[in-house]
Length: 508
Image 1 (tube, one colour):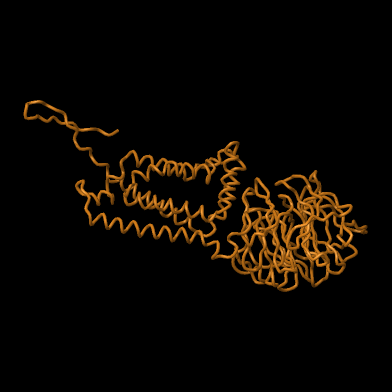
Image 2 (tube, one colour; image 1 turned 180 degrees about the horizontal axis):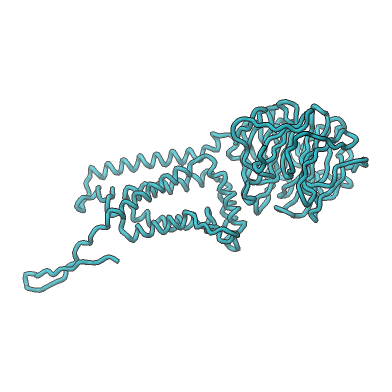
């Protein structure tokens, strides 16, 4: 509470009047806290300009919405969809506003107005960016920085912290504006505005400067295959914690581009995908229109510069997570496993020929499983199937398809029990590459004539745990890995990584 000093003044007529004494200025430490607060906001804003910040923000909104009740959930989903249209622009604007507030508060230039602006600003940040501290998620009580900044700004506002060490007071010594000081402050303001514009523009155009920054959304379970006819990787769909996508993205070896077209499969994920030279198209079967255990689809789609639904007789039962790969010896697509609407793993070996799908009668085949990984081994000239889930536990067995029958293969070493991981032919050495995920002590494995071999590589490795998409990269440059779920289970990434035969490199 601020105390007022009142003293008596006697006028020439002898009347006594009370005059309000000048108010004492706030303690210097209050202004020091204001300056420190402004510096923190500047650092926070600069960090917002980091490449990739806007890429993860949409996924963060979806993750917050997943554990929030209505109507907060609907509000967060709406914000994620809105920001997802121009994520770099929104990120630039957000960082510019926070940087301007930080500079003004630090210098004491219109600090009173800016401290008042902090109140709604950080309330919005707390609601959208931090999900109110996720109070609705089990075991979380973190208040985050939003309410802390809000309360600090309110305290500095009520404490008149701008009345000391203020650039505004420097412009008006003794209450009168000094023209030279005003010109100097204006010139400095213009310089700051130019810097803000440059930083903001750099954040916005970073999409163009770095290949793939405007690429696929952060999802898991997307379908991907290399279209050898066009030399592009085709990526479709995928789901995050709330919604699924029906967008198609093309990677030409340098950048992602969104494909256009009036016809597309429904919003879905978890389908089996491979390229068929006989059909000159990428073929996709099954999947689900919902994240988790949604309905299992039994539709077949093909991509050849556009999507087309194939009307084939007697399709296999609808399934999620089937293993699908092309067998160049029999010139057919082969599919095994997956899980149906009940979530129970399925068996059965199916091939897609010129007349449609056919189930093969084989003497021996792998036990029922879902979410197994399968790829063609050019060295052994066989399809290699690994792992999956039997509905109770994850599997670690390796099987080979020789065009007529299945055979279980033995290996001295093994990637261990795995499901929902990715495997692809590696054009750099003619082997098979498997990425076991960030949860494994050894993430990258190669299959060859000697069985499974761990590959150390150099540099960083992709941070995803599961649900990643993998396919050979264009022009035989290596293997592409895109998206997937992070360790939290509710978070997803849209990062693109390339395996070049020596190690992993993030390229988007």
